[in-house]
Length: 322
Image (cartoon, helix red, strand yellow):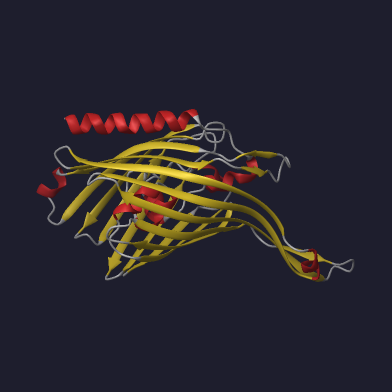
């Protein structure tokens, strides 16, 4: 009980300090609030206390602090916002912590450039890009801490006759801070806290004003429910919940998720995101499969603004562990 109370106090202190520093965000940088990774999406985005490998870089950088294997991964998404691809390389060490390098690209959709006769002479490529360097380590046997340093760009590149103008690039920088605390309350229990997109300003494409980035504060927990072990052999059930505050851009919401794992290789996931002002998807389903060094995950969301606009979001992740 003493460990449980100290865990709750730790998470509360981190969340309180982070929330006091949370600014509003720029409309032009709201792509930073889009989810990354099929595991997290399948569990309703309640991943701040989870350890999903390279996906954790975008949810809580502390989560890679205990990773034992190197990893190459791609996380692909297709939503009404565009087509996203996040590439990551994770490099753990025995005594110096874990480092990772990632790039996350959202292709908004190309636009053709035509001449006065209607002939296509070039193509404009608007993209939102995040370069991230991550570092995490175990401060104690139970406590992990991590940080991301991110370079954020709103880019408009052009090929063809318009290429001589050069790319238009609007840049900013930000950090993510995170911590996780592992304990036992009848079964493994992990608390997590993270502050994402802290610091930096970026011009909005809509207002052309340099506004703060949309900082998010999230706290949550992940718990293994042991009752299923008595009825289904080689099967585990994990439940996760988190509370997130995005202030003016999304407001407050609760996220819930479950993961049923069979023999450590097959996963069935389901999640729920409480509606906020951004219209997040209200439900999600996911499936995962590990075969040797390869891990495949897929998830879909249902409800919310993306589905209402005619594009049901799909997320696919492929990881290679070595």
